[in-house]
Amino acid sequence: MRANLIVVIIGLLLPFALLAQHPLLRSGPMPGYSEMREAMIWVQTIGIATVQVEYAPVGQKGRMRLTNLVTTTPSEAYTAKLIADSVEAGQRYSYQLIINGERVSLPYPTEFQTQAIWRWRSDPPDFTLVAGSGAYINETKFDRPGKPYGGDYHIYQSILLHKPDLMIWLGDNVYLREPDWNSMTGILGRYTHDRAIPELQPLLASTHHYAIWDDHDYGPNDSDKGFWNKENTLSAFELFWGNPSVGVHDVDGAISSFQWADVDFFMLDNRWYRDPNMLKKENKTQLGEKQLEWLFDNLVSSLATFKIVVLGGQFLSTAGVYETYTNNGFAGERQKIIDFIYEQDIKNVIFLTGDVHFTELSVLREEGKPTIWDLTFSPFNSGANTSGGSWNNTLRVPGTVVGERNFGKVIFRGPAKNRQMVVSSHTADNQLKWEIVIDRE
Image (cartoon, one colour):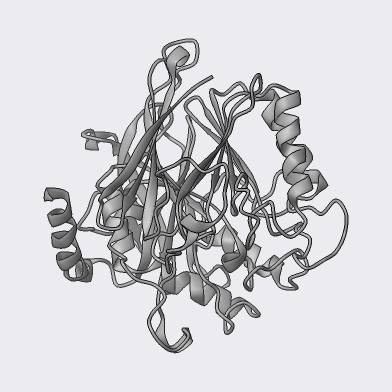
């Protein structure tokens, strides 16, 4: 009850507090990737401006350092990525944005952190991850007539109360509309509008953010490799997110990878190489040959306790509806991935997925083989699917269906040999729906 009251108070005061920010600040600042020797902070201005960040270890203002200085330009939607490279591992830093030489005062904390050097020194550090998909921000002149599809923006204030170390956006992070996806003006306009809502800004400012995409931030509904404008939507994705990379080696798309403590994250693109859903063909693919090979190489060589495969659509569900992996002719590739995990005896593989507008957990257990999990969290604040619990998913973990706006939380905790994932779902109003513990194998 007290947490809900805090959310209400923040929601009432936030729009007024934001009036005091710099007149050229559009959205952000937002920490992106975090490493041991550098971290990145993203920001967007309203017009051309010079931007920089001043930072110091929390409580040590006498040790201020500056990032690189960037001039924002219209060709890059007035966005900037600022690199904090005078840092020490395992530290929290407070930071202040500087626009045109003027320090910007914000009514909420602005902090980032660097990852700790722990291997061969200690047990891995505990940390908290929040995840979800489906962020529809209403804009009446471009929306369908009738009841607004988006709502409950205060979910982002509820998330902030959990003080996550990092947040993974699981796709449909913006919803491109018909006026948007065929022009760079429309694509950048959608990102700019949606990123700037007041309810989101405090969460952006003190949590590290990573993202993949799905069909609605890639292009039209259920779009595939044939979408003609995917180079532009990929450019916008790169401008507005702070992943360590966009593409890896010779594999194009919204693909990346990172580590956090003893966990490896493999961020996949299920659109760039995807065969059309309606195409009748053998050996259909969502990931493409090169991306699949990259995933296999990394899974088999990973030394991480947990290997998190981040994917836009559900992987394990046997429901065979809409864009689950078992539908539209993609079941063979799904089985190929499962067989590889079994043949190579890769333990603790966890799929982290979205798309379906409801939450559920799935688990595949076969005697003598590694257990595979699929944690689906959806939606943040787009329309919820109230009938998903009736889908015939034989691998569903009973009691984990949530048919309303919600977010997932995962706490990685415990000593190296007894590492656990504490997984839970919370509504937009911060009500706990369920919690389970997954032990390392």
